[in-house]
Image (cartoon, rainbow, N blue to C red; front, side, top):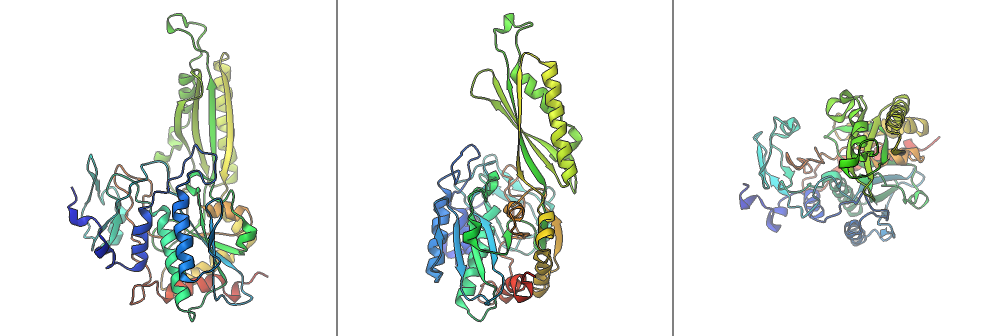
Length: 438
């Protein structure tokens, strides 16, 4: 078990850089999204953090900071160079519904030495570099984790904290260069609805950057093409003693369809540029004879994405032929598309200038594919090119083997612990006069 001294009290928080202190406050606000809700946001508690962020932005002197009825926060950082394109910075306030979302009790592991981290929990959770090798990239750093019972929430409260600290630094020093800068905090990203109700006209930006996960130095320019397939099997239910020739077992039929998905094209068997089928959920439906299964479809290429959808249609047709007494429905809902084709078509300088920004900060950046998605995928598809910038969080959906190690304190720091000039140069480089649209 972790000793009580690992718990973070007010005095300890005050010894951390301001951006990390913000992060520790924000993760303790439960903002878990609800995938079964049709409201916006899907959980009212997301507004608890959004409301706080709007209040803190106004307290900094950003007078137009406001939360709308859906929980989105919009704000304008003053002082941008006149005539330059408007740059938007995005982070999402919600956390994933896959594991417990609260109460979050963050812990700071000082000067990480490469050993296994005992987080706590019952049964005890250990974060071991043998299973989480990226830990070893952070020897000597302070590592922030949860306590083994919940998600930490660095996806995406690390991004929220970075943007908030940057806003405060820019407001506090008018000499720091910046483009016209819009800040936007979104809701429901984790359930694929992050920009459903976002008002792009109100935002008024020409280019955007999400700050949402990834190791230091990673710029994400591609995402999967993504869809969720729902298979609904309406069976025929009779007493099992007299079922021969009559029963259509909805649970077994749904299981047969899932079992027919290629095992070598599952998440646990793929990496890199490979797509997959993810048998995500199977559950009873609204009636005793209904079973519902969810399959997530992912592929980086448009052709591969369409082939995967057709293959699932083929499996359902085969099941209909094999089980004529059952009624089998298939609904495929697209979640997002690979953002790179939209970024390149709209303005590839959104990527190029991010690399210039990294050079200005003394960072060597690498271009990465996200084996997942971000709000930037939907935003790019809607016409706002939006690559993703790293925050330093890892393994955002794990509790069983330990929540993510968030190296959120390792940011370009000024001597007083603010985000240093490198960060503001990066924002300026990403949207200064040279980035003006043709």
